[in-house]
Image (cartoon, rainbow, N blue to C red; front, side):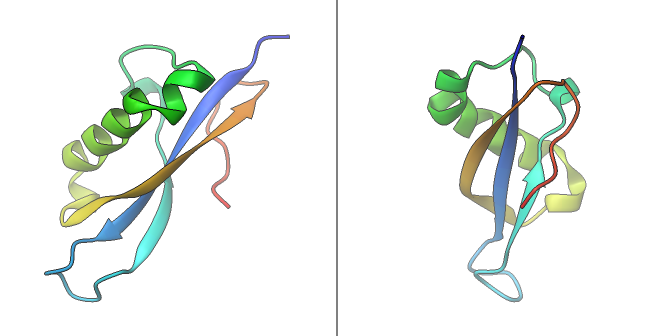
Length: 83
C-alpha cells in the first residue's frame, strides 16, 4: 500500500497584527506542492519551505507566519482533516 504525506501548517498571526499569537491549522493542498513529499522531507527543511511558500502565496493568510508544521500519513492523496 502506498502512503501519502499531508502537510499541515500552523499559521500564526504575526506579532504586529491584531490578535498576536492566534494560530490556525491549515492543510496544504497537495496540488500546490511542486513534488510529492516523503515523510522524512516533510518533517525537515522541505516541509518548512513548503509551509512558508503556501502562506506567502495564499492571500487569505496575509500577515500569518509559520508557527510550526506537522505531517500526516494517509493511504489516499486527498487532504487530511486538521486536528
